[in-house]
Image (spheres, rainbow, N blue to C red):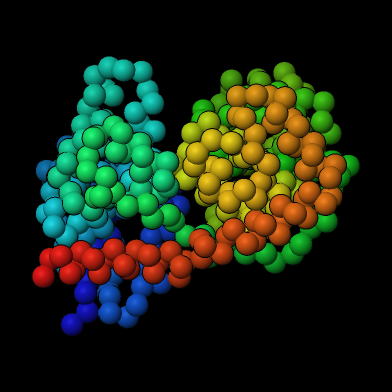
Length: 332
């Protein structure tokens, strides 16, 4: 009889990269396992959280794997055969108050206390989990996410040194678009931004006279095409759990500028210009170096391709399978 793993997911919305990643992992497991995916019924607002806790009924399985953003649902599961994967603890980076208190309890303290097996998307996130909960370090494993299968090179574009297309993924505050706009002021380029821009970001881009285009709601192939059409990728974020666009860009053979902060610098494997995200002049320096130094671009491309090898779906799936085997052995 095969061992059944049930992946438990948030209710689907527009942002499903995590769910896609765990489908890649499931597809890479050996044939001794069978997998199924089950979503909670409601979203992640306060009352939705309560309704999920009240009405969710899990299907039968040998191992349960909660895949992120619904950490609280762990309260309904047995500690002996359940894994919780935590993508980041961004919810703690809000002003202190009642909302932060409840988020910390529901999304971190109580789930981590209850379960024996926690995975973090990066070593940086692992350290944050341990520091914020004072949990036993041995229960938190660093297991990264795989490169998604829709990311592949079809056409290689010659780098446009006259007016490069700079691709920016994401528009949330941590994505650091204001500093990127200031860094690009006066540089001849086209900034392509994926993700909805609000009025304040548009104003900053216009104030810095940035030639920009904004797109959102793209499917996998459209996102792949945006990478393909870009000359370089900017990802100078101030906070991430992992930084998936870094390895996506590397897999697409694009030079990357990202933050010199953890976990971005580790995710990049050093195959990127690492800039201080709070230093506009340093971001500008990196962008100009990539534009003007062909040898440097080729070096980043070569080392980037080497870095993404460790994020291949089969490689990552093998690491998760080792944890599943550990759980099965300890349950017997």
